Image (tube, one colour):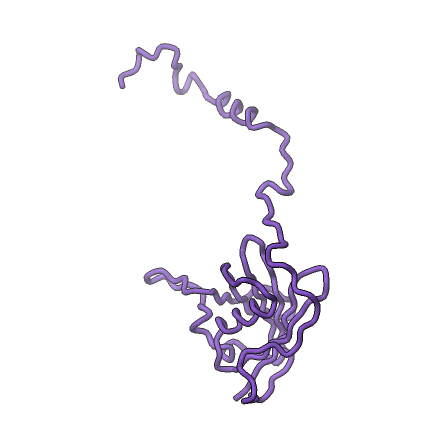
Length: 180
């Protein structure tokens, strides 16, 4: 049986990577847990793999769980997608996003296809390089980061009320004129 050796690089300032070997008939959920454990993460967040090209662009998604609803077809899911079924080239590239709020991004590249060694359990890490970051070291960006606020909330509310056109809607000066 074939085994695939992936170099997995985490997107950090320092050079940190792991080489993970996985069997051709194992699935992306196995690879997900191998990556999480190799970097010392908890594994309690949503994640997806994205098949990629030479420019590391996101391609077809393979999600952590089945996201299809009724007749609507969703992306492939990790547990039903074998590794071998997605390997198209000897240097296959895959993006892995873990925790969609903190956006941990991992770059996986197939670096070698080898024969299964029955002395090992799969998947397994064959090389550790660099110290893994703490999973909680990334700060969730505020929704307003990068935005400038020239007006106060009070100014915005006043603008809404000033747009009210009394000629079109009438006035509320005499509440007794309305039937409730």
